[in-house]
Length: 424
Image (tube, rainbow, N blue to C red):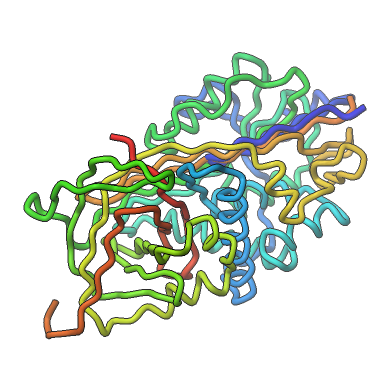
């Protein structure tokens, strides 16, 4: 009987498997001691033939995935704040997809990008490469790693693929209780300590842990001066009111679609903050339910510069985390979670793997200087064993609203969330 796989998103995927292992696998790869992580690190022995290219199909598919992930996360809650990183989940599940076969692979790629593994890999490689480019102004990083059980015979082609496409670091580890603090240390380091703990335990059957961590620290293109920060009130989704600090500014990009009004505020570098406020008769939940990738992209790409937008944005900070099994299943990923139907033969021939659990953890802080945000994802697998006068608009975010942090180069959200309440 197959054992379980758990995943944690910040982003990280953990895989477990049972069966006879090849104890000579370690001799076939180069081994070194990585800094700060007391586990052996493996080097890929080759590269993939994947080119880094963001196609229109990738952007459309990833936008659809982003909207569906967010709406499902909102629907699974009950008026709470939500924050997901579609990029983090896509990268994490993308590493799993590279070891999947048959209908398991088709469900993963169709859900993640609405297309083929080639579309997923080319777009993911390009996104990863650009976010880790040294010339960035905003502090943005996307990190991936695969932690392999000592002696597990993992296919070299799989190691080469995740190393080349996702830049994954490959570690050998006992994947027992001693591995937990090492994994958490890696995640904490890659998220600037915003996600200090991703896993609290690993099952005895754990054979592999795949981890993605996304970290964003952006300074506003125009920061808020002290005089632009005033006392205000935020009315939560349950009708309760809380005192907040409102940051006031005039922005020059206005968004609306008949159900929401909002604005775009740029960071220094290649990222934007977009926030939109549902009309008084439209709840965050109802609007999220109507959201799709096309609408999300149209809001961003269709922003008008014809107005001076008088904005009030509250300072806020919160953490979010959830089990994504049901959400991803509803989105179309079924076989990967089924112990009888999952096919991950691209990882190893020794035993059948399936994903038992996927968990997502995120953090965000928005203040007068800018934004700090992080996300992590993991999965565990087991087997059975203002220059000129303009018309003005007002957008005061003093009740529940939706926001995104968008990569300007492709228009895709790195993070998307909603604020339903603000606790001091």
